[in-house]
Image 1 (cartoon, rainbow, N blue to C red):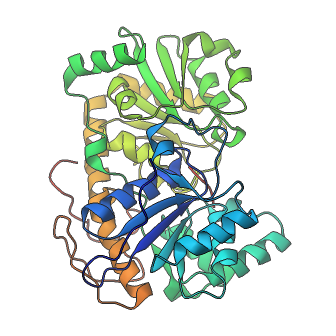
Image 2 (image 1 turned 90 degrees about the vertical axis):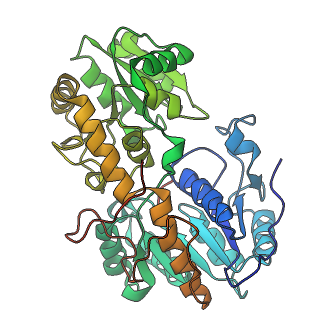
Image 3 (image 1 turned 90 degrees about the horizontal axis):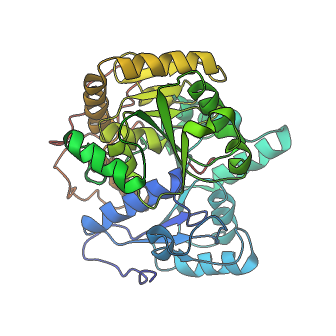
Length: 409
């Protein structure tokens, strides 16, 4: 059942309404869900709403069932009216990518509820054309603040849309480490494969995402065609699935559909593969890193902030199946355990939710004009700045981590 409308908690912490485009389990939605849960764990009032349903959101999936939907369409009048009403019970709306920017700019006009826009993609790939760029810039200027997942993306937003530098912040993508534990030895890996119906006697690479043109599953299958001893587990669905199931290498690919929880696949796999032409900072790579998996990925967007070439995996130029196959073969034949351990350590330091939630709480307090409340996390304290959490691509001190550990626009 959808959660109840939040009520104000004691103290000065602002009430947050997270707005996502639809209730699918994709990158922007996953960040919203995890941050929403972490804020509630810390005692901050938080609610999660989706603009509209989506045909790919399975009605019985936990994420779908736990997410209230505001209306029949992303910018439908009933949806915008419901958003305006829901915002009355919040001090700030956090708009997570895609159509949430337009929805908030329209629905919250003339109200006292500010919104912060979370840009999750690569601004170099959106929007197309000068008219759309002007329109997007006008909408971004309506936000009280804008966040980017990497410092390079922040700089592009400031330059391309003439945004005031002080209102654009860098807060990395993040996931909760305890949701993606590494496999506890070979027996645990075999058990995870058995539960997913995957072979236990082959090298297994995981590919996760929407099966859409920009994600380039075709490129992954072209690479697989050059690696006869490797199998590919594909978690996701989309318009290209039927055609790609007929690919020559599909005999060694296992199409699992959309998984309600990808954690068992990470425990089952030997590596993760990302073959996209266009990304921001993919949550899939963070999840896999927290699970201790090395990654082979195309060097697009700010993928390099998660995958450190030669240290946690390998980066290759986009669109080159031969280079992708060679890098994958090298990683699979090398010290996978060492690469995976380095990937986990890097993700814990820079992309673990408990680290990043502190920065979000400081931004909420800044936008709402209230004193920043002390974190209920691990007690890390960092001075507030325009770059709220150090970007791993920017030289500077490493953020200490705790013990242990999609959408576009």
